Length: 287
Image 1 (tube, one colour):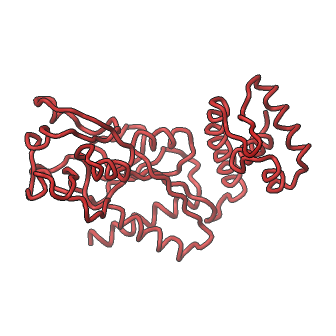
Image 2: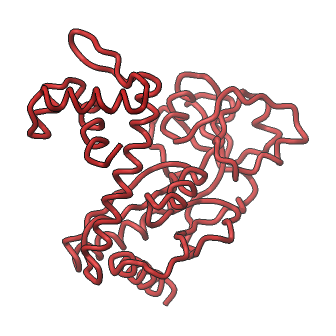
Image 3: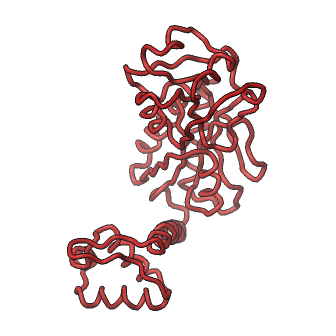
């Protein structure tokens, strides 16, 4: 299996037909079909369900597609890092948790692009656990996470936090008129909670409660709340929906907002420029 064939496979998966993929790749259909057949024989699996209209991924195909995307992204990052040595430009990959504290990062990105318009920013929204994994794989350059503690293997920069924890409830819910709520108030209702492992659930441990769903991104949870599935424990400032109400807890959250990255000696000029700009933004706030 080589990188070129992986790219062929990913293109077929996206286009769903050999003809469209061949057109995208500037190859003949017989050539591309033969490459796919050779790949399936090499791996001894069927990668696609073939129908008269479109090709869909099998379970093995989906697994390879997910891994191929990671591999191709890492290859592109490696090539760019070597060819752009010392230059500021190219792709910067940043994973971010959902947070209302993003404004400083957004200001940093605006200033960075004004200084270096050849930079392209790529944001990936996910929870902290997945961001850690992507940093370790090398497919992300930085992570923005809202957590209580950070694994010691990462470099960190503490950023200003605007988030407040509470619950998201439908308009007209019995709790919607409250200014604040306690854990005791919310455990009487079906709960929707983050699947992130760092989220502290110990506050629920002394109560009888029922978790009916977990979520990765709050948008999904908000749709469940609106549908009446339950109420979501979350942070404020992310969901703007007139049919939902956010009620803060009566205690202050211990979570903090961090910029994190892997400790490495070969940081690119682009990564250094991003760090310098975000530190400059922090300096302006603090002074």
